[in-house]
Amino acid sequence: MALQPERIETFLLEAPVAIPVRNSFRTLTARPALLLRVTDHDGAFGWGEVWCNYPPGGAAHRAQLLEKVIAPLIIGRSFSDPAQAFDYLDQSTRVPAIQCGEPGPFAQVVAGIDIALWDLAARRAGVPLWRQFGGTGSVRVYASGLGPEQPEKLAAQKLEEGYRAVKVKVGFDAAIDDRNLHALRELLGRDNALMADANQRWSPAQAALAGKAFDTFAMEWLEEPIAADEPVKHWQTLARELATPLSAGENLRGIESFTSAITSGALAVIQPDLGKWGGFSGCLKVARVAASTGVRFCPHWLGGGIGLLASLQLLSAADAQGWGEVDANPNPLRELLLPQDFKVSNGRVQLSDRPGLGYEPDAEILKRFRIG
Image 1 (cartoon, rainbow, N blue to C red):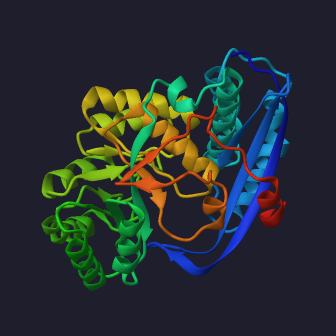
Image 2 (image 1 turned 135 degrees about the horizontal axis):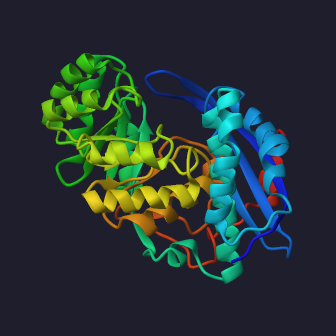
């Protein structure tokens, strides 16, 4: 599995959307994506995706960071496997990230490279990533990102498409949240699952008040009701006060932070985003800690098709009882950058038997949306 990267290419993409995507603190009027392709010295290649949803212009910044700062660290260097390359980049970028105050963007670029290196390694071995990691080819998924304006309409569409679980955005207004959760629970009945995501909207006191009103809706989890960096005691107190299980993780970095969150007893669900931190190398470590404690592993993803495929491969390798996240909102950079045979059936996705991630982006699609 030895690696010696020779070239890293970036593909900066953007697609306008007719209906803005809202959460409790921002609105997306276009969908960005930053893809990369790593080519090894023998011509083998792999694809990755860098998280870049926020802030506006963040994708271009991360592309510059990748091309000018991080890619030169590994070009021409030899590694025994992708995990060794991840550890090297993680350590090599630690001080520069601190110096410029950007540990997030640095971690996101390193994560995208890790995804590509694992895709490369599995393609070279001729096996799908989920099989290389010892997973199963079928994963459970839910439709996420339902906004505050009549989310039951989009939920009904997703049920028709084969989903059996949806996640709605909350934290806009108590009356709106109550109205939407009632409408969704009525639509879903008790046989289909409901989750809610507050996107760090509330203070601990506000979250306790809002969360108690949610307890009657029998939700799988309430996601990030408070800021990710709130002291763990606030998370533990909230978990004791609410009947609804808590989830978080997309805004954590480093195995120490994840281990602390998992072992705190506050979370029922841990949600690492392999495009924000860790790629496969880091997030599989998180999965092992979660498995040892009984916390469910449900990776977060909101981005393009390459990252979605990677996230579902990660889920397959990590937790057969977990859920994979699939954005319900229109996004050409997801819809057109997925295999044609990608579909949801009875709440599950059957992953491809093709090598690596099981997909290579169409050059014409990349050309159509490329802005850099």
